[in-house]
Image 1 (cartoon, helix red, strand yellow):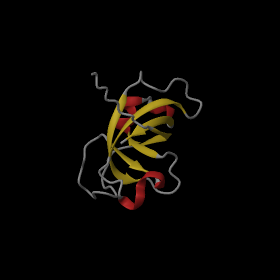
Image 2 (tube, one colour; image 1 turned 90 degrees about the vertical axis):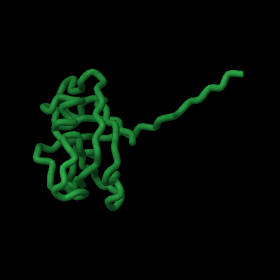
Image 3 (cartoon, rainbow, N blue to C red; image 1 turned 90 degrees about the horizontal axis):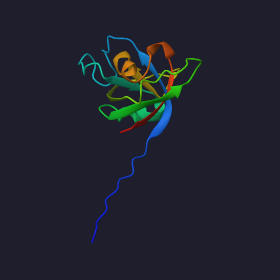
Image 4 (tube, rainbow, N blue to C red; image 1 turned 180 degrees about the horizontal axis):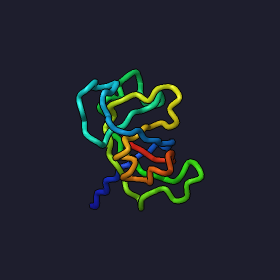
Length: 117
């Protein structure tokens, strides 16, 4: 008898932008630093602060503006949610510049991403 185990991973999609350091203070942890691979999330993920501390794997899918070929060869970045991206945020997830640079050219400014917890 052969047993086959499979797992289905569901990835959400949306737009991502980035913010420049310093990455503190943050809405979740005040002045406590969690390094360079961090993110803020918009209302769609914030859930009244319950997003704090969650980790997401983020992958660039393509440009969300006129920038040609912004993605970096299928790279992914794992980020920890430390902040809230207030009303007017242009993405569902606001990556640290370090995280954004891992998956895309920062000159793009805004990209389409897939992400999962």
